[in-house]
Amino acid sequence: MTAALAPRNSPPVAERPPRVQRLAVGGWVRSPLLLAADDLADMPWVLVSDFDVICTLDGSHGVLAPVRAVRLGDLIERACPAFEQRTDFKRVAVVAEGAEGYRALFSWAEIFNSPLGAGVLVAFDQPHHTLPAHAGPFALLPRHDLATGPRYVRMLRTLELHKLW
Image (cartoon, rainbow, N blue to C red; front, side, top):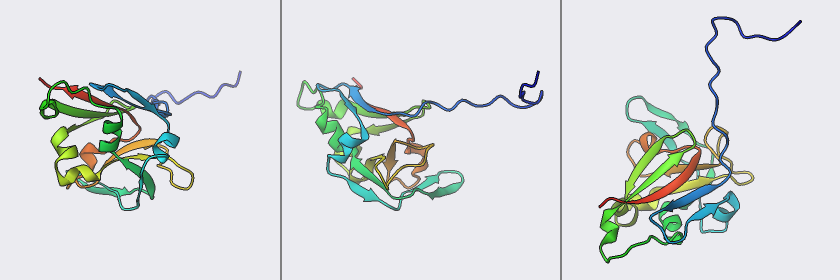
């Protein structure tokens, strides 16, 4: 009997989450979305060629290869937030979650009422512009954060709007 067995003292093999094929936009919205990369390619997009993953404690982890991306704000608007009152936007947080369970938080004001918002992008795979296998096919890129790493969400699977009060 010749079976390939791992050595006795070897650490368990970490399972990698399945690759996300669609991005869900939901929560406090009127029109939940389930989007493929081709859906994002049909929207206005930019080519991002300078996104450096910078962590707070240990600096740069490297620049991603060029990738296409759409504005997070455009995806939120497309899902039609379910505001009931004129000032409801003040009560909204947006949570981005990756397949590994990692989450990043954004306020409505950051996305729609500050210079940061123009740089919060959702990158997506397209021929000749793909994310690294461990990062895609969707990733959230906070381009204008000083340390981009803490809110960089690889393998992005959901964007949810939450009414806070």
